[in-house]
Length: 248
Ligand code: BJW
Image (tube, rainbow, N blue to C red):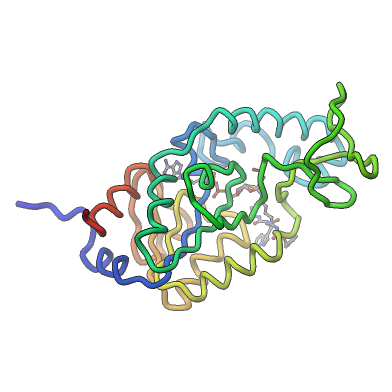
């Protein structure tokens, strides 16, 4: 007897979709060896306090601590390579008429896997910006003390990521919300859906009539609100799902 792994209606909905929107979170990079935030034991927030490291107040209080913590994370990211989940999402762009890929991740692994026009909601850990003028700075004088200083105005440099209490980049958020409103299928992959406004996107899509599919190894706070919950690692589920929906 053939065991059908995925619901036939889900497969047909995917195949017939004109616009698929995807929101990814830290879970999609977990199989690349990058720690998530909220997984018990292994998540960053199980070992560090967000208030001490990922807020503008923390940077004001102790810029060296914050800069050095991000330098440590940048090293982890630099050693990581995209996994089968990133690769499957890059392939998806060639399978559907329109794809919008939105990520909360700052690691750049979707782009490394070949995804284009990735909408980054929380910035990118590889970029730095002037803490005073908010301008992205590409090069600066290497000094022993960290953080380094802005070559234009002398203020401290900081990572170009979005901390708690800060606005998301307006254009990125607008594009993500527009995609959530207009897509037929919304995939929420590897995110706990705990951080706003990103966590609202799957619900916006659902309210606008989209089929919402969650891919996560554990239940999340939106699992009860989505159309399909696919339980497992994104690096395993996504390649299988797309292979079954679009057999060669
Ligand atoms: C796997 C897997 C595998 C593991 N396969 N799955 C409305 C209500 C309440 C509060 C607010 C609200 N609106 C705004 C707020 C305040 C705040 C907020 O949301 N707080 C909540 C915690 C309650 N939001 C903000 O401050 C945002 N700014 C804002 O809204 O501005 C306007 C405003 C300002 C002030 C007041 C009010 C409004 C900014 C949020 C910035 C978040 N920044 C961070 C750090 C980025 C830089 C960095 O990398 O250091 O972004 S925090 C962290 O969380 C990071 C992530 O992008 C984000 C989301 O986490 P994610 O990706 O979901 O990771 P995890 O770890 O939570 O989940 C991983 C999941 O993967 C798990 O479910 C696993 O099961 C799963 N998994 N392995 C599949 N192999």
